[in-house]
Image (tube, rainbow, N blue to C red):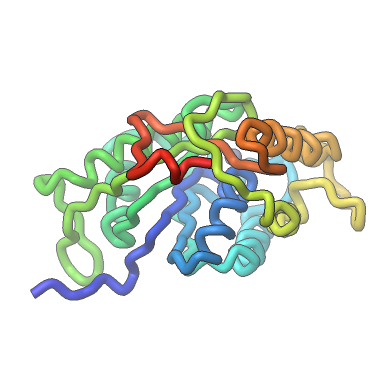
Length: 246
Ligand SMILES: [Zn+2]
C-alpha cells in the first residue's frame, strides 16, 4: 500500500539564489497559491557572495518573502554560492528534493544569463530532473528509500538577459504584490522609503526595478495584458484545447 505523501507539492521552484524565485516568477507563484496549489521554493545557496547583506539577512528576507508568497515550503540546500558544481554530489542533493516533494511542475533558473551561477544551476536542475526519474539511482531520506519521480513539466525563468519566452503567464492582478515580495529583500533592491548604507550594485539601482517592470510589460503586450512573466521550455508545450490559450 502506498501512503499519500504529505510533503507533495504541485509546483516547486529550484533556484540558486534567495530572490531568484521572487524576481523571476513571484506573480506565477502568487497566482498558483491563490488557486489552491501547494507551492515550494528551494534555494541552492544562501547568496553569501552578494555585495550587500549577509547570509543571515538574506535568510530573514527570504522568510519574509515566503510569508508574503503564501508558499508551503522554503528550503536552503547551502551549496557554495559561486562555486557549486553540476556533478554527482550536487545532482543527488537536488534529486532528493525532487523525490521528497514530487512536484508536477518545476521552475528553475534561466539557461544562460549574466550571472554564471544561473546557467550552471539551470543545467544542474535540468540534469537532476531527468536522473530523478531513473529507479536505479537510489536515494533515501528519514522515511527510507525514496521513489523515483520526474515532474511532467520543467520550465526555466528568464532573468537578466533577454530571452524570447516559449510561454508567458498573465500576472497583471499580482503585479503590486510581486513588487512587495521583491522588496522584502530590503538589502538587495531599491526602495525609496529607506536607504541601505552599503555599496550600490547592479540590482540596487532604481533603474533595475524599472527594467523588471518593462520586461513584464513587454511580455504582457503580445497577449494584451498589462504584466506577464515569461518562461522557456526545452520540449513542446501542449494544451488540451487551443481555447485554453489567451
Ligand atoms: Zn540569482
